[in-house]
Length: 503
Image 1 (cartoon, rainbow, N blue to C red):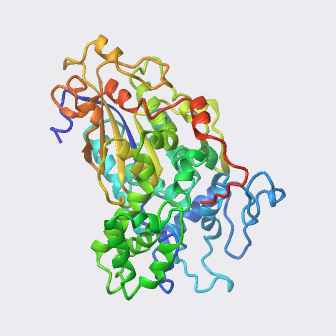
Image 2 (image 1 turned 135 degrees about the vertical axis):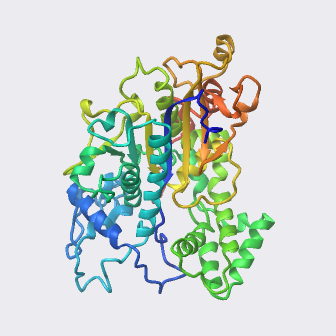
Image 3 (image 1 turned 90 degrees about the vertical axis):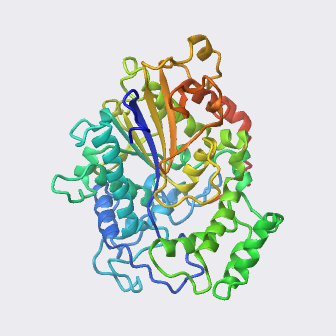
């Protein structure tokens, strides 16, 4: 602890990206007969949440169609299920949350119990994992480092910024993490209700302005994920080995072959991995002839396919440059606290979850420049960011993985001279001054990542070494990845009118 956080370093800010907790598989193809009964507490907490924001629909009722007039629109792709382009929490990945909460299942829902899980749903196991994650963050940032108070009080938005994608499993994970970090005085879980939303402002975004999914509105980026061919992937021998070993499994081989041979979005192998790792994550037995090491290898192939586009600077810029700009702006604003009281333009597009609904925050509700920022997101958010920060881990990230950006100040240790600092490249979107004597550390699941740019002499802390990058060198590292909106528009190209994409 003292080696990582010596007394001469002052922790100014931490930005924590966390993946949601354990969930059921997105689809059950290999294990169609499995019953997933891990969601009793998750169902209850989520029904309380959707009641609080006015989105509760009992199981016995049909799902409402938010905008029926949009069905059949020629200009956009709308479905009869939602008649909306993934607007807020009404879109399809979150549909299940709108239908839970009734303790007695109608006859139309076969074999439903209060513990029943839907596909892709956060389970009680996932809730507990994120609660432990929150307890860990409390121990580190509140108890030991005193970065934030132990109790949120009534002024949390002055120092805490919370943002989540609008997937239900991520919103629930965010609640669980906050419950672990700021528990009730009696130690019980606070309900995910109106009082909780008043105390902890949670921001989300509509799909078309969300930067934590990758920029799938950019044609030059998204086309790299379309119709991924298993045959092409198998040109690499190690991938062909994994394929051959999988299809030869008596228990799942035939089904897995059909799944992998079909052109897919992102990866042909991840859909097999996802179902098997979900079994293991809940302590359930794998099929008899499937070893856990083989599941890990499937995850590695999925990681190779999914992350291939972000190994190039162009892919990083087009897909995640906007998100990295949000991180960078939030960081730089914390270096000049006298001039930046409220968070800057990077919060534009935020919607606030409030009692009764989802709406844009008022000027008075604009968060302060945070000492702690929490971002509830996904594996395909954290892994690309980690690669940009120097990670070479070939494995698919576990549930509840964390990527943390820590900002420090050290006014005592000699830092690079101003002439050296000013000579380094900076992102074109940076318009405000950068405070002196600041340093950045990046951690993936509590393991330090060393940025390649920061290894050179004069670009890291003289006592801590390359693990602690000067802020100026960090800005140099991200400068090629961050572009202006005009540059994005030019480089992304025009989405073809006939382009058909649905996550």
